[in-house]
Length: 267
Image (cartoon, helix red, strand yellow):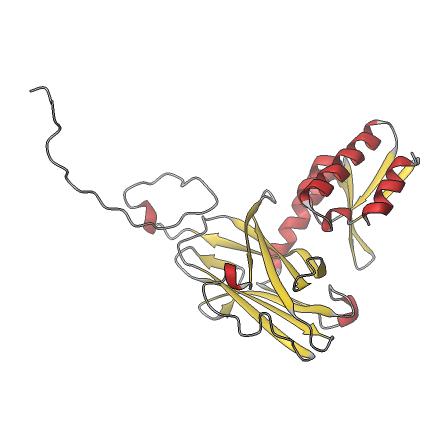
């Protein structure tokens, strides 16, 4: 992908078609891609940018076409299409399924089958700030003896990253019994719990990725695959009724101790 993009970008074509180039490579490579695409566009040439990265689309494109399984859903001014696309995830009901594996994200090694959000054991896209949020990721492993890393990325309504989490031991408060073990073929479910009173009240979307351990590149990846809303209960506004800034709003341990009179105080 890196070589193909580098060659295509320097051939100075009249039309540059870029398909999901931001879904691969590291941040440095992605920045180079964005810079080159902007340079090509400013030079008067046409860039057709295929991506699920809403922030990049909003920054790069004047007009946007929304396709779903090859079908035209909507076309028009970028801001309007991006808003409609993001808003569409509010209606997922907290669960996305791929019953037809041919259409599921992934390859011949592994494919996603469903992603869901739960609160109090119930699938939902509306969560109270005081409740734990459970993310369930179902996938089908087709390769005998594979070892898989499962990751999800959380974004806010501006498409900025809030956090990333994975089932690796160094990033896990519990123990994933299948991490680092060779897996037989079959269907698996990986679960992660976001603590209560952690996220601020806002709208969030989730990216899900599966990679082979130590290989690093995504075998299956779905961006902005599902969305949910965290609702304020008012519990943290008893003493302060304004808005809490930030993407997280954790309850932290505070205490105050009297240390004695100030030395040299003026009476």
